[in-house]
Length: 335
Ligand SMILES: [Fe+2]
Ligand SMILES: [Fe+2]
Image (cartoon, rainbow, N blue to C red; front, side, top):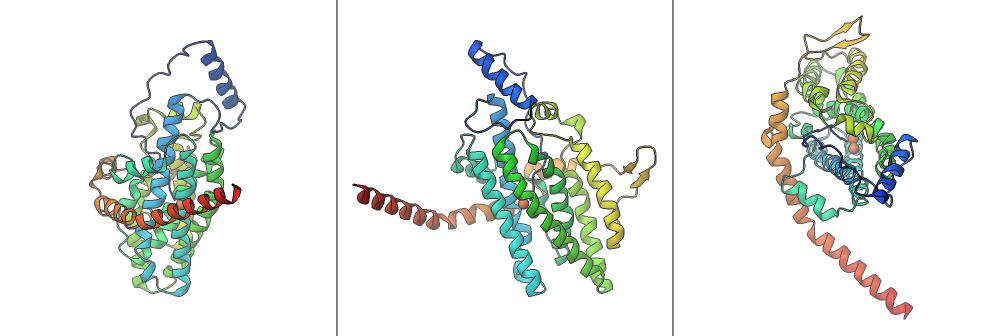
């Protein structure tokens, strides 16, 4: 899924002045590339702060994809039909794939997979706070597809134009798959809304629980996002958190009418002057509590991830042993 504009990094310091003429030349070439919408590639010179920002963002995104497998994976064995099980399996596998593309993209910036995973497993690195909420009913699976993947698409489509080539290219494929995730969620909910009164209540309850955490996925308000301007200058961020959130609200409201659900926000209404919807205040204290490790499922998610990693050690050992054997054979044949 799912990046989150999780601007928890300290505000970037002013960019240091170039140390000498050679450095100034490199900086100028870098700036020209940004100004002319050329991609920055792994072998190109880049400012250290640009590299670090990308490593943080891409790895946070990769971690979110991998942790994001858990809330829905929880329902694979209980999906109500073979068709729903096949769809959900495919979706959860897609999320694993997204994580792998993104770890690979991060590795091109000179950080190892082990370092990235270590950051996640020790709790140093963040992932999207949305995955620290539980999936209580089958309707949650549909709502995650519809709203969480929907928010992810809104967030991620602009990253297809990110200035860093490997990240931008990974995002093009990821966004195509996220569209399928969003559609399957909406379709599943449509079927449930056409079912019994109990099913409709279940869908509405899931919408009520997920709506506000989904709005928070876009990250803190622009006024509290000190690094947005630098991210925009670098071509990493294209649209601000508040603008993306607004676009998402405006796109979602008509869909709720098709579905027959209401959004749990008494302040939500069309604003004729602004030509978009007004919406109520987001509970940022709750958001920061979850980001800080105190959400309903933070500990469980991390423990499950660490256990899966430890239990997969034999697979990594076997793959390495096999690769060594192949290499030794190739060397022997070449000799
Ligand atoms: Fe994904
Ligand atoms: Fe997804």
